[in-house]
Image 1 (tube, rainbow, N blue to C red):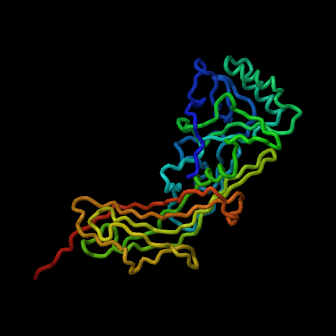
Image 2 (image 1 turned 30 degrees about the vertical axis):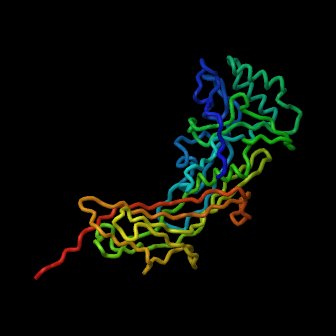
Image 3 (image 1 turned 90 degrees about the horizontal axis):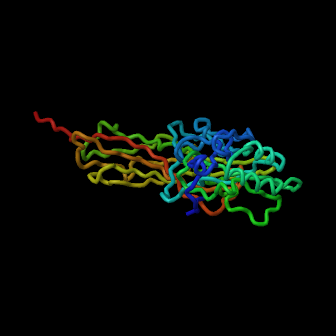
Length: 347
């Protein structure tokens, strides 16, 4: 499992002016003294609201969007015409990065930002500004100031960056790169976290409201799936990075929703054909036969696709796979089914 970015639970958004004095200026993604107007780079992207995976990609419908300040998301259009949803990781312990450093300012821009954002501020913001002033903002040096950015507004998750180092100076040849600087690996995590996958294109035959005890139910695969790729890229102030995740459908799992079925669950392999990946379920041994009626209720039938996810450190989905690997992705279809007893007719 890839380690998630995170070690410190304190976050500036939770602080007040009286308590600590640093907050996130949400309009710019920059730190500022509480109740102060924030200056600096006005091109940064306001963090998206929400809670984690479902809201990281502001362009979910179009397959494009942004994260942080300058990270752009672009996704291929799934071949399936059905509904899509954000991929679920098969590894319950996997988490996308909460925060990272991105390139933001030249020395001159940084000086302007600090003097605008912290002018007249109280402690500890005033000390932070004096520290940067003593460093002369690295004016005359080659490099950029990188600033912390967040995946979304889920600030209760762990982020290792503290207000004492809200920005870091990064020279062209960085001898000891900060572990929280954005990298292709971090971009691959963000791309995976933004990936939308099509729901399994399955249809029950007979229909879900017409199933009978001891009558075989075919799980028909109605359509073909293709691989889905998502690119997260950064191109700002001469810093160019990209990572592309590629999700390939490999298996369809069916769960009857009750132990009173034969089989209760089974797996179909997906095979690549002329029009994409598909499963030939006709006559397959794992079509479901319900052994008991659902009575006045229903059974929660579920079908899920397992997607093998790889990534490459470029915008090319056909680039060589890189390590460490990503967990498999899952997309799910759920439907309540009604199972009745077959009624015999006596004459």
